[in-house]
Image 1 (spheres, rainbow over the protein chains, first blue to last red):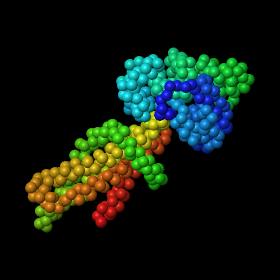
Image 2 (image 1 turned 120 degrees about the vertical axis):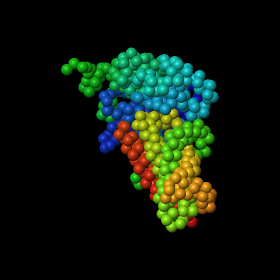
Image 3 (image 1 turned 135 degrees about the vertical axis):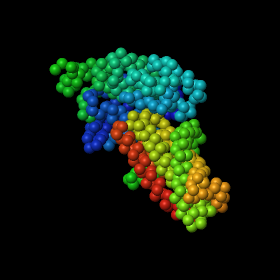
Image 4 (image 1 turned 90 degrees about the vertical axis):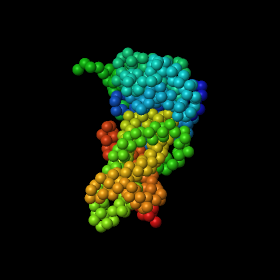
Length: 251
Length: 245
């Protein structure tokens, strides 16, 4: 989120220590501890309402914890300065595109507002990022003209403009058909290969998690049940994890 | 309402501190200014014409009975520009523009657009509040001047057309010129500037404080309009006291 747009220099590390947060008298996060390595794709899985999205909002500094801390490359997020120092982007579950702006204006908003490039250069960068996510020539469209999947890809393009060192994805495949979900999954992998960005993905999509993750954390009721490689998590004997990973539609 | 006063004061202070960035946000200020003018000009016209008209209609026959009708232009002009134009335009703008501001910012809050701005290191006060507040603070005083002119015309038309009053346009405006001076117009304009700040800050604060879904947006809009009107009327009394000295 720095205003200096530099060439990407790889991902950042994240350390979460003893994170606690209560909302409306209910303890949503109950002392979370984990670490994400630079350039890693780290997926946080868990059922709906397990505190995944709240965790993400804490990591990017949108919320302050009741206790505990989050460190980016060893520096606390909640002082505020670290968010100016490292470039981080959050892809919201809904996309959170500004409905009053066109897709092109949305994608170029960071550059326009911080006056980092000339209008011509912003147009070029926007076109380039939209092409990367498969949305070529959609600059003039309004967000309400896009499908759910296209909105999410536009949101990823907006995140890419920041040249992020870490991208956080909140349920990137929710409400998407399997084909669009696969496209999003591939985009996440491509980005990690291309710019070695640290990716923190929150999802309850098992296929996505096991398809892209370097490591997975399973979270339930604000606690981490297991952390490990996809194989390690798959072999977990924890009954809640087993139930979550094997749930199907059969009655 | 009063529990939000602290938040409103904080928001106003943060916006004041951001004032040097106004030039950078000039495009958005212009867009908001255009929006305010476009949305309110016709209503200002109709409202002001009839306020001027009803003033003449209420006071005209009474003054005619007492052979004071030569002062009608002055009475209508004075009361319109000092009191009725600023207060009515303040209320109109609270309903028309304040509600739109609260709804727009409220829906941006509910649909995480404001969070998205924050993750891009874009300050919502600079991006959303500053342009709106600057635009309304320029637009409302201008609308009040416009309202003065239309209101006077409305009064003059009614005074000339109503057989109980029967004061021609020329004597109406002669009386108005005799009584109303620049200071009277300025009095209304200064008041409207403060009303604009009240409506802008209240509406933006309510928008930013929106919680929940569409119901929350509706609640914010209602609170923005009601709180703006109440505060405008209270401020009107105190401003009048200060400006009369």
